[in-house]
Length: 445
Image 1: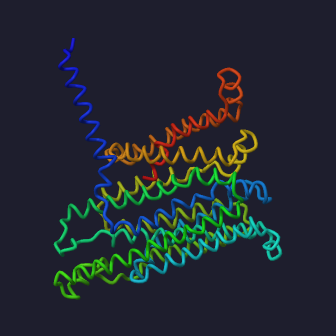
Image 2: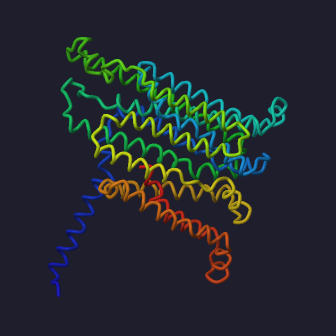
Image 3: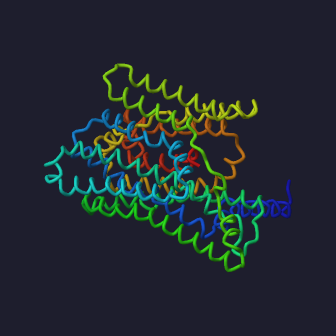
């Protein structure tokens, strides 16, 4: 039988391990924060808070527009097209590195135009529909928004490179090991900024929708592109200050230019990436707008062929074992990401059958976002020690289990629990959200 002393020692060791884990996985990343990281994090934050209008959009489409869930699923395919072109857009940013801020400005303009259309559609419907049907205006808005977001996202990824200085303010070089850790830190903080931005507005969007008009909500969301543009302006200001700091330390302009240069060589256009992406766009548009019965299958197979060709070009100079590892991980991630989502029909079922309103959707999203951030910090170390295949399989199984309560409610589970246990659909949804959200954003991290 263990003595009191051994029990106290065991308890002390548990506390020490917990405290060390808390400092390393929860608070450690904030100790590594630098002011130079702020500009790209503002762009990422703008992407996170874009979910502010997500709830009211679902209700507006259901109540005011005559679009079916099947049509919205097809529209989601076209809205996802810009994200499929993130790689060539990133290459374009590399080609026009010195003018990459223009991508953010253009993206912000497209986002603002998309939101302005929704302001008019929700607040000045009669005036808007005098020019085009409401459904057409909505489609234009949906297609413009992701183009703006993906253009800003690729620039934010590029800005993270500039945000990590290779030299201290006094000109002393930063060791390579610390530079690598700094790059990992800013990438992690970028994901925290996106999820944190989502957490800031997740519940707010639903709660305010029960008080204010949809037009006012969309009007408030016009601040989102302002955040991203402010990040780019601040980034330019910080780079100029860093340059002045090096000059004050006595370095020549040529030395300062070399110290701050992140792209030291001229990048030539990669025609494999640009050409393959162009073929993908043309093929998708031609078949997507055609009347061919198997057009979806043709687009899917054609997309796989183009992706396979591009991967072959990228991997041909790598060692065989590294190629097999990358291809295996790519296949696993592709299958995991290709899983279809519930779609608009599921949200409408929750509104009509389960009786969820804007405020309750806001509560669910707020709980999910907060717990997702806590789970991301708590599981950061655990995920970093597991191989990608293990994580994907685990997350797939876990997500499947977490979908069972909603499947059960489709068959009347909430009615049985209400009659026999005293709680109904809202309690089930809240508990399921609390259990799922802590790991649900694992693949995003």
